[in-house]
Image (cartoon, rainbow, N blue to C red; front, side, top):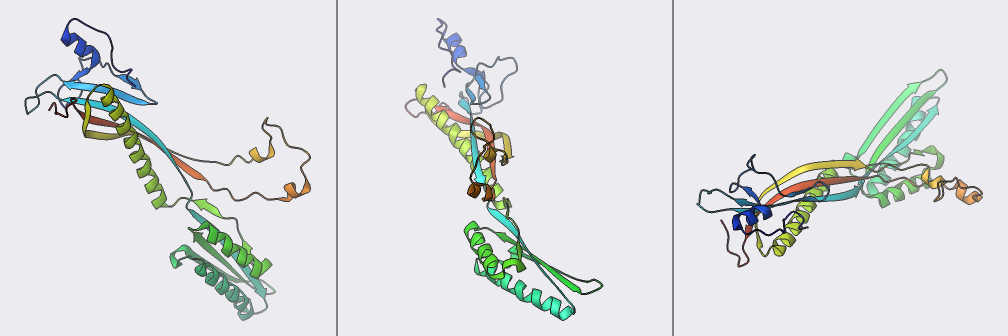
Length: 281
């Protein structure tokens, strides 16, 4: 952690200070003619201490510590969309629509009882005629935020309506609110890591950490987890499993819930104080 500071000695105090600290004007950006002496660690952060070599408006020197912090946060999908389809074919329009309407009303009543709001329901109906009869088809799309209630509702519909309704596999996704919270959390975690790093460095140097003067998010990344369909069919050595019993081959896979991982890298500047809490600025 302290690799960014030179431990060499010098008979000239000014030279010793330059070997240990990177000199910047007080509170300003680096002077192009000054060669940086901080250690650049792209994966673990940059640790620099800078000392003002000019006069700030108050006429005093400024010491600042710059560190970078990184963090990764993962979040599983918080929403699931399920499609339910039903239909009927009869000789008259009334017969075709009545049967579908009764089942459709039961589906809507069931999902409402399991906490689904009207905003999370979409119903589509389509009536058409062939040469012999009328066909009535309906499709209900339900968005669940409680996956336990989703399983309870779909199981009840399958039990009561049996083959007269087709229940699709749930499609999991992240809501906008979930993604926003994820991005905020990873940035805050990166700042917290930078603060912890700066606190340990200031203790090592016999100084105390002052207030932050600048926080800048340098880089953000996001990626989604993907299920490898071949993993379940291979052993630890990558060979296909053979001789599985009948029960295991007939068992279907459970729906896969994807996750999104976000990473953040931030730079934070802190004002430095001496050991007795006295500010340099």
